[in-house]
Length: 93
Image 1 (cartoon, rainbow, N blue to C red):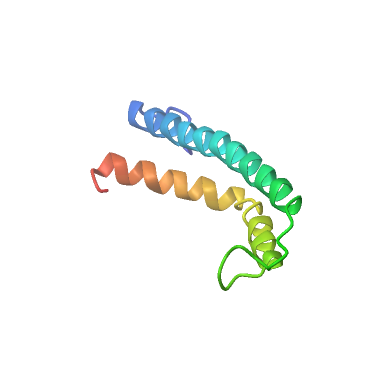
Image 2 (tube, rainbow, N blue to C red):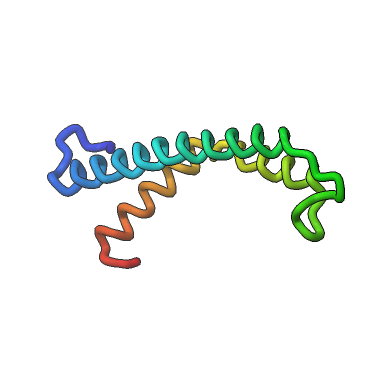
């Protein structure tokens, strides 16, 4: 916010943006824990006949799960939250 005397709408937008970012952070932490738990569980399994997923090597599955733990760029998240709030305020989906 560039204005030293923000409007009520600007304050509501900032609050909504912060709420979206907080919700994203909380659910991302939960998601990360689920993925880490899955990786540990899968790594402890033995498949004598190969991967349980048709067409996917077990190493590929574990690599994909590792990729899912790569966090989003914080700047991108902030911009996405601001865009979502602006769309909401404008009444667009």
